[in-house]
Every structure is written in structure tokens, then in C-alpha cells.
Image (cartoon, rainbow, N blue to C red; front, side):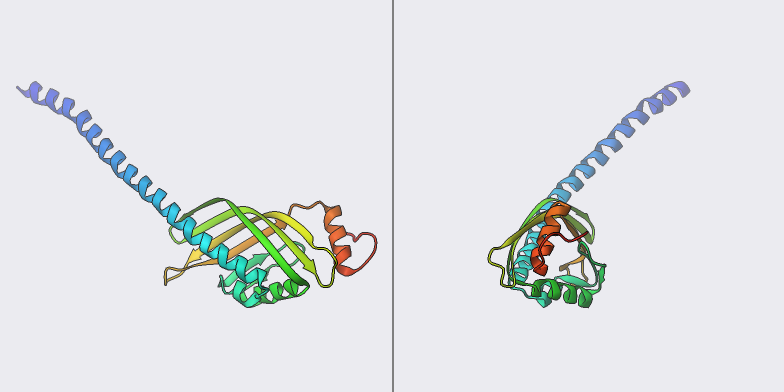
Length: 188
């Protein structure tokens, strides 16, 4: 009898382990479903921010663009120092947008993710801009990475934004020469 109880216990232990594993798998499956639903919601929320960013940028409204960022945001544009804080970001945007008489941007998010109150977006952009009185527009294209934070009110704001051109150095130099009204090339 003593051995029978021991054998019964030894036989039940693996069964209990399997039951526990099945319960854990069920919970993880539910969590994965929830994460997939959250990514869909996150994607929609990020699309709203991108649409607002595009509208404000194309309008040349540096204050509205800056309003989409956290107060302590970091903006990392190429060939410039980091703009730290919403006010510095607005100043930098106003200066660069002030050189353009018009701009049109296409944003294509290719990857996104997040966890908790942080999310990221990775993608490409194409911007067509007319500089001052230039007779024809110039086009830039490149890639970007944004990191957004969810605030206490539940809204998302961009915390960090880095972008850079995919144009070659020669193409950038030619563009800078046109902007500066110089002939020849500009050293990078």
C-alpha cells in the first residue's frame, strides 16, 4: 500500500505539471492576442500623430509641429546639433521651414512596436520643397526613427526623433549650393 501511494504520487506529478503548462500557455496566448490588438490600436494612434505632423509641417507651422512633442523632447536632424526641449525644437524647425516657400512630405511607417507607455516607429520619408524663389522644387528622401511616450492623460507625444537623408553627399552638396545661391559644390 505504501508503494502504491508513492507510485500514484509519482504518476500524478507529471500530470500536474502538464496541467500547469497548459494553463500558462493559455494565459500567454491571451496575452499575445491582447498585444496584437494593442499594436493595431497603437498603429492607429501613431497614424493620427503622423497626419497632424504632416499637416502642420506642410503649413509651415513650427509651433504646431513642436506641440506634438514632449516638453523634454530630443530632435536629431542631420548636420545640426541636437535640439533638446520643445522650445529648441520649435526654433530649429522654424529656421529650416523659414527657408522654404512650400513643402510637401510623404511619411511611410514601415515598422512599429511598443510596450507599456513607450512606442517606436521606423520608416521613410520623401519631402518636396521649394526654397525661397527657386524656380523648381527640390526633393529629399530618407529614413526616420521616432520614440513616443504616453502621458498621464493617455495621449501620445513624440519624445525622440532622428531622421537623415538617403541622398549622396554629392546630391546634398548640390542641394546646399542651390539653397545658398552658390555655384559649384559645398564641402560636407
